[in-house]
Amino acid sequence: MSSVNDALENARFTYEQHMRTCRQCHVDAAPCAVAKHLLRIYNLARRDRLRAMGPGTPSA
Image (cartoon, rainbow, N blue to C red; front, side, top):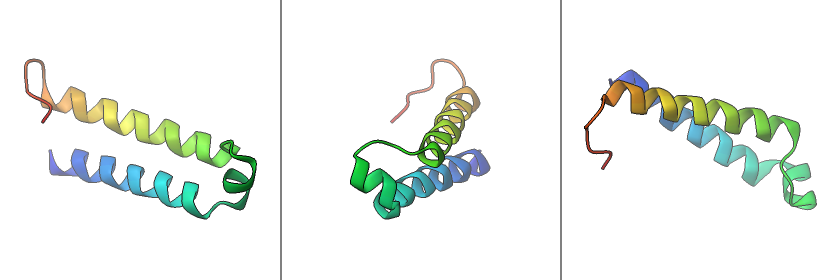
């Protein structure tokens, strides 16, 4: 399960780093195509983590 958590943290870190450093995202105040793609990857990793935890497992 640590690989699932690692994937989630990596996806989150990559998305947040992009949002901080991308000139287009920062200036336009709207996510660019890359940011949208990274957010999609983050959401998929989060969904995988929830599935790996199983039903009835507390999320905290």
